[in-house]
Each structure stands twice: as C-alpha cells, then as structure tokens.
Image (cartoon, rainbow, N blue to C red; front, side, top):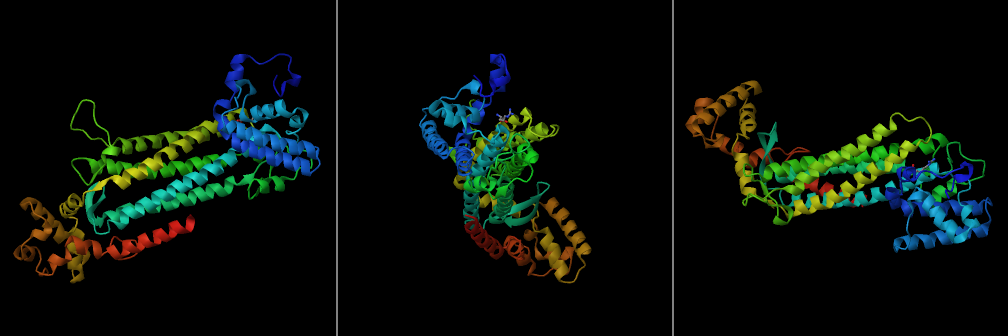
Length: 459
Ligand code: ARG
C-alpha cells in the first residue's frame, strides 16, 4: 500500500513502480532525510501541532533507524519509491500512529529540497578540505622549485623563462578561486526550504526559523514556490565543480605533455603510471589522462541538469527527480580525482636539467636582449627588429643568443657591451622580473608565503 494511495482504486503497474522509483540513488541521502525529519518533528511537538510524546517517540525512533541503516540492518523497498517514503514507512511500521503524524505540514517537495541542500552542504565541506590538501601539495612543490628554471610558453611555443614554482603557483591561484566559488555556493545552498509545503506553504503554525536553526541553516527561503522549485544551488555546485575540473584537466594536459619523450620535464612515479599490453617500452600517464577525461563527464552533469530545468513550469515537477544523479556523479567524480591527482603530483620526478635546457634553447631570452638595448637608449621597436635579425642569424648558425661572440654582438648593434652576457642569462631573465606576480625567486617566495597564510586562514 502506497502512503498516498487513498484516492486510487488500483495499484501502480510494477513497471511504473520501478520507473518512478528513485530509491536506488536517493538512498544516499538517508542521513539528511532523518536529520531533517527529527528537526521537523521536534518543531511540530514544540508548536503543539502534534502531541509532545509523539514528537519525542518519532525523534527517538528516527535515531534508532539511522543507527540501523548505518549497521546495514535496513532494507529499502523499490515500491516505497524514494528515501523519504522508505524512512517514513519504516518509522510507521515501528511506532504506528505517532509515525503517521510526522508528515504533518510537510510535503515531499519541500522535504526533498531540504535533503538535497543538506547533502550538498555536507559534500561542499568534504570537497573543500580536499582542495585545501591539493593547495598544500602545490605549495610544497613550489617551495622546492623556486630555482627550477623552465621555459614558459604561449601558443605552446617557447616564450620567456620562468620557474617551475611560478608555473605551479598559477594553479594555486585557480584553486583559490575555486574555494571562493565553493564558499559562495555554500552560502546560497544554506537557506532552508522546509515549510514551503507542496508549493503553497501550510496552514499549520510551523516555526520555520526553529527548524532552520536546528539544521544549521542561515535562514529560510522567502517564497514557497521558489522554495520547492529552486535547484540553482545544485547548478552552482556543478558549475563550480566543472570549473575546478577544467583547472585539473589543464594541469593534467601539461603533465601529459611534459611526460612525453619530447619534453621530458617530469616523470610520473611508477605507482601513478601504466604500461601497454603490447609495447614493452611504454609508460603512460593514464591517471592524468583519466582526470582530463572525467572533466567532460562533470560538464555533462551540469548540462544535464541545466537542460532538465530549462522548461519546467513552477512549482515542483517530477522532472526534478533527475537532479540527483548528475549532482551525485559530479561530486563522486571530483572526490575521486582530487586525492589521486594530489598524490600523483607529489610523487612525480621534476627533471630540472631538461627544464633548464628547454629554457636555454628556443631564444627565451630574446625579449631580454631587446630590453637590454632599450635600457641603453634604443627605442623598443628598433630593438625588437635588431634582436629579430639576431634570432634569424642564430638559427642559421645553430647557436643560442648567449653563445654569440662579442664580435657577433657588435655586428648586430654597437650598443652591445660585455655586460650583455649577464643581462641575458637565464638567471637574470627570471630574477629581473621581480614585480608583484612575476617569476623572480623573491616574488615567488612571497607568493608562497601568502599562499600558506591563505590556506591557514580558510581551514
Ligand atoms: N523522489 C522525489 C524527487 O526526488 C521526491 C519528491 C516527490 N514529490 C512528488 N510530488 N512526486 O524529486
């Protein structure tokens, strides 16, 4: 017998039961559902909407049900449709009439809206902690590599020398923004919809603030229709997670490139690589590739719910049951990726020699050669042209700019003097860029110190 079967003259088709049921995936919200019902029942008792003894019995029994679920002693039923009705049914089976009073002044519409908000709040806290660990891993990597010179790229063409520390600190900044987005999502998720009822609130004198407070919410939703039909917070979470995955994916793409024989800037630890079933020499960066791949999956989750929501009229429609699987999948995927990514970057070998050789080749000091001329009075455009010609000559001779003889320098421009060798050395190129945000060792060390303070401040 369905909890709502009063007006029906026959039972639902078994296939419809199965089709309609969401217990397979929403059972993971059992804890939130029970906590929400405990708060609701206490409030009903406090307000005298149901007898105090009933409220107390409900609260006590829900606590026992929670323990039983956690000990694997409860079996959920497909024809009880979802987690909300499964728990209500178990409660009623155990305590009869008192249990039947729990749903007073409440609808599954505001109940499910409450549960998913509570679930997302819990998960944001867990994901946030993972992101913080990842930020700490990046800070460690950066601290160890403030002297590790590597080429910086634009268009994947060598551009100017930087350090590995500076490069990875770029990802730290992305994660800092991800934390901001998670916190922002949390703020808008942290509003309690209970009391919205099915769509038009209720005639019972519910104390909405009491429930919100008991459940740790910042406040209550302001409109009952919006309270049950809003899933913005779920979309915000998934867009936050999509952006975060995009960051991991870009980092992974770089690690994949850098692990190639052609770059050889890093080597993944054996524990984070895989071999080939046919080619004995292979060592593949599968972990990084899979994280890059899973990014598409999280984008898909976001798109899925955006599409579900775009055409549904107010207020609740069953379409909205489709919110849960993408939300859960995006959360699961991110929680799977961050820890493995973290260990992967902490165990990889940084090949400082190839990085430095990479920086030295490819004329990454050409800008500095032009700046040298500018600092001695030549207009920048002319200096640019002089160095452009030097690069063409160097390519022909197969040498680097700092391998020019003084005579060769003088032929290009008589402004050049002995101090040019120091001016265009990799060290000067990197450490001369000592303005805020630059790659100079001192600047990056400050950035790392600030990063450490930031991480401490958000723990
Ligand atoms: N299982 C449903 C969901 O996930 C709960 C709300 C059902 N409400 C309803 N009127 N059918 O959305």
